[in-house]
Every structure is written in structure tokens, then in C-alpha cells.
Image: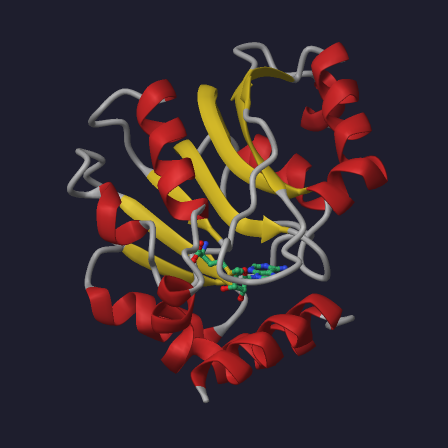
Length: 219
Ligand SMILES: C[S@@+](CC[C@H](N)C(=O)[O-])C[C@H]1O[C@@H](n2cnc3c(N)ncnc32)[C@H](O)[C@@H]1O
């Protein structure tokens, strides 16, 4: 039954220990992900799209969908007036689904959390929904996203409460104090999958990259 598979898939991805494990689990989930997330009432894409539209002007380009998965957000970005969006994900299977939608200008199979092969300031905006969560990517993934985001550009992300309380919030405060980013918006915590009992709440966060980035991140 779809629901049982859904719970199994979710439980497994949150318990994964290594990036290759996460990628393999999502590869196996890719075919049924969109349908199962729809049943669960998955909210991260809508909230991220709303935040992006509030803080990044129509036409801004290029954008990066970091941890794009099957492209649930990419489907809407073009319609909303963002003409060039690239997808990044660790799972080949999820990226194949995103590719089939024909909404991304480029697809990158890469792991967040390490060094990314993009030049400084490459993207006008970055969106990352459902990625900064248990067993996926932690605060260590932030610095590279900030580096590849244009000064003055925005990063919209969701952060699960467990991660937030386990050092993520402190890291954001540190980046703000260092003048690296400004927290332009932080939502109240919300449950991203109302149809999934016991879902730990997450919050949406919008960071604007400083126009004069901190020397700490520039080496
Ligand atoms: C819950 S899904 C969210 C996908 C999409 N953003 C959405 O909202 O539907 C999490 C995605 O993050 C990807 N992911 C997990 N860890 C990653 C990492 N270290 N680097 C890149 N992508 C990662 C997974 O492959 C998966 O596609």
C-alpha cells in the first residue's frame, strides 16, 4: 500500500548515515515521490515559492534549486517569472524525474555539504526545500551556498526544528553577527507534511547575502 511505502521511505531517508545511502534511498523513492508527497499534503514547496516571490524580483536569474529532488519547485518557478533555474541533487533517480519535467536549464548531480564547483556569486537566488533536515544536510552546507549566491541575492531554505536546535540557529546568528548574511524573514515553525503523523515541524528562512561578504568566507 502506498501509505506504508511512504512511511518506510521517509523513515529510511531520515535515518540514513552517509550521503551515498541518502542518494540510494531517494533513487528508490523517485518513481512514487510526487504522488506520495501530494497525499501527505507536502507544504515546503508552496512556502518556499511564496518566500522567494516576496524577496526576489521577477526575472532574477539564474536560480539554483539546491536539493531539487523531482522538481516540485522547478515546475512553478518558470510560471512565476524566473526564467533560468538549475537543479542540484545527490540522487540520480530524483534528478531524472526533474529532467523529465523539462523545467530546468541544467541539472547537477552534486552533494551539498562539501565544496561546490560553481564560481563565487554565480546565482541570483537559491532555494532549498526539505533538504536541511535530519540525515540530509546540516549547517555545514550553508557556507558554500552563501559563497555561490550573488551579493544582495537571497537564499530561501527550510530547516527542521531538530537541526535548528542542534546548532543551526547558532550558526545563523554567527553569520549575521559577522555581517555575512541578513535574516530577512523567518517563519513560524509549521508541519511540512500534515498527512504524516509525528512530522517534526520546520521553519522557512530567508537570508540575504551581504553586498560586502565577510573575508572569512572569501579566504
Ligand atoms: C525531501 S526531498 C526534497 C526535494 C525537493 N526540494 C522537494 O521539496 O520536493 C530531499 C532531497 O534532498 C536531496 N539530498 C539529500 N541530501 C543531499 C545532499 N547532501 N546533497 C544534495 N542533495 C541532497 C535528496 O536526494 C532529495 O531529493
